[in-house]
Image (cartoon, rainbow, N blue to C red):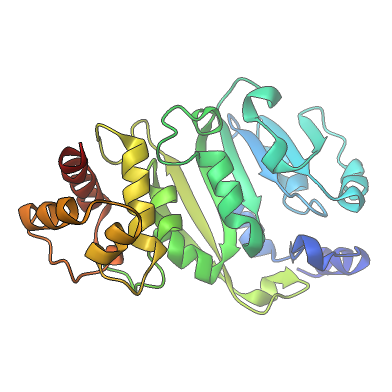
Length: 279
């Protein structure tokens, strides 16, 4: 760890960008285990380049998208033909504009921008042909431990963990925890632990419904007011009171349960039945 640690100390990190550089050899090696010689990599936020300089030795091609000018300068030492450095905001970057191929995405992203980046890469649940998602095979993601728990959560998890981010991520992908990563694996050390997560993109969404935009509206309604029960959450979002009551009765769902107790399959059933009653 010492070499990375000393190099990281020389770098002027920026709190506003949430920069915490991975300096742990063993964790970097674990990330590299996910990479093969045939992979085209998109690395988001390479920072000082500690992971990047190893990726270029193992992958077929590496595209690194970085917004920080100081990091761009630091990455100039990587002079490999298979390395392409892009000075841009990832939220303004379309994968198809980089190359018409399947990317394996590797990213260490700060808490405040996790949801926007995942939405950009995966698309919303009613965006069935999202071009970025269509260009991704897998995402190896380093996030705060709390966020990792939300990404892998389901209806059986504690209610604070399971929510819109869980469903957004899992709707078109399988999500699994690779390993927990301690705060001392980074410089500067964050206040919380992190985790490596694998997101494997699926060909088809988790469920099939007649109207994905309607499904998205139903799910958002159920999580918008967590303290309200299922019936009141739907009514509060503008769904017809009688239709809601009739739907819940037909599906044998207790109107006093909360949205976070429903699985993605159950949300799909709720959406389909509610749409019939709202037609």
